[in-house]
Length: 71
Ligand SMILES: [Zn+2]
Image (cartoon, rainbow, N blue to C red; front, side, top):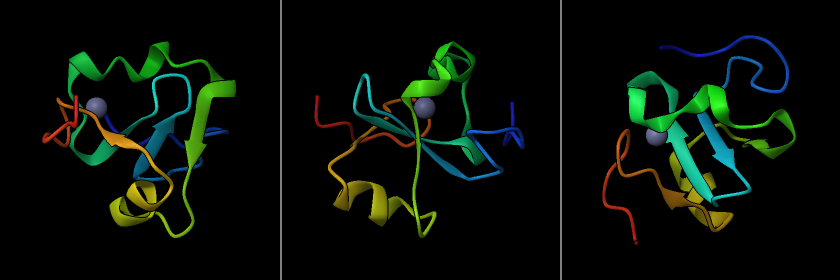
């Protein structure tokens, strides 16, 4: 459970899923995040690779690796 260096992850810390509209923190990844079940075409990365950028883009926190989900 760690960062993935293949495309489309490219070693980024914060990974968005544009299917669920949730952002995950891979440095704190939990089994329940099910990162490996996210289809590549649903993977979103952020520039800069920060949590605030993900929030700015409208992503909700994953309840497992970040917490304080809006839902
Ligand atoms: Zn997560």
